[in-house]
Structure formats: C-alpha cells, structure tokens
Length: 290
Image: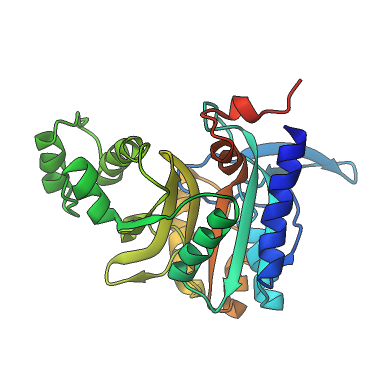
C-alpha cells in the first residue's frame, strides 16, 4: 500500500509540473478560519511568547494559496493536510490530504478538461458532463425551481420527505445526496452550472455559478470553479457566511483580491481519489494507521 501511495502521489505531482505549475506550501495553522459553507473548522489554543491565542486548522489551503496567487500570479498547486471537525465515515475523515491548484487565465471549463487528462493519466476512462439541471432531471426526474414552495412541491411529487421547516438549500442538498447515489454505476461525471445560491466563491453569470463537482462511483472527488476576483463581491459573500456562523473574517484574504488575476481553482480529496483508483469503497481500506 505504501508503494502504491508513493507512486500515486508522484504521478499527480509529475502531471502538474509537466503543465507548468509550481508546487507551494502554506501554513496549517491560520489566524482566521476558512468560511467554507457546510464545513466546521477546528479551533485550537496555542501559546506564543507566553500568551494564549486562538488559531484555526485549515479546512483547505484556499485562503493562503490565493494570497500567494495575488502576489506572484503564477500557476500553483499543493498537496496539503486539511482538517474538518465532526467528519467521519466511509469517505470522510477529520484529517485528510487535499490537492488544490490554481490556473491563471483559465476558467472552470479548462479545469474540467485538465482533470479529465489527469484521470486518463491515472487510468480512468472518459468523463461525462451534465449541468445540475440536466442531472436532476435525468437521474431524479426532479425539476429545479428557485421558488422554495414550487421546489418543495416538485420534491414531494417525486416521493421525497421534506421537513416542514426545510429551506430551499436544505431541500436541494437532500436531493443532491440522492443524485450522488444514482451516479454510483456511472463513469466519472462532472456536474456543473450550480444555482447561484451555491456559488461559494465562483463567478456567477446569468444566475448560474461557473462551478463544477466531479463524482466517481458516486463519491464526490473534486470541487472547482472560475474564481470571483471582485473584492466587494467576495466581501459580501464572506460577511454573510461569517455572520450566519458567528466566525471572524480574514480581511487580508479579501484585500488580496485587489491584486487577484483572472483564474480558476479546484480541490480534490486525494485520499478519496486514491481509494477509487484502487477500487476500494471506504477510506478505512486505504488507511496506513497501525
């Protein structure tokens, strides 16, 4: 297993270096938490110079890498350790490896092409591509509506149990989990063009986020998008998330967008990709723990 992991990592690194990327490293301990929707950061207490401080383990290297990107404006990648609280299961761990990269001058379509080339290098077959709306209609027979009551009616008509207090996003996520199940028997599949309510930090055009997720055997592997570079828009989205979750805001990260080049970025759960590469169904099957 160790030899396979070593070969796997070398293949990934060689792929990005061959495409002009520079490998970077960033801190695991941050002064501010990542404001990732639906992800719980790990808060830690440290002593520096005899004084106790609250810091955060990164849930992804996104903030630190974008600060580098704003300064140097080069294609960069990293294989980093990340930490997410309260995550455990067949495809979840509190601590895991993440591959993250940013391509200057590219968009999310470029990244899907690039990932497909990486998957071919690793021995996977051709990928499918479906918009979110196409995927919902093909696999769930569920039309997506932005109107919460109409969407609720559509879900109930399709046999979904919907809680009385469920908001639009909760209902969408419930259907999206079912979509992942339906993709288990399909070839690697990109699902793209998310509703703008689920844009994260992606550019939004015509009410659709230039964002995609990749599923292999029903497992979410990659999450990428064309990056929103407008500092005012980034602030608006992050302030909303910080207020909702009562978390502090990284002002340095927002300011970095004043110098951010047009680019696209993506993250891949590397342990998950290794797992499906080996034909396994649980991270436990690729664990090195004694």
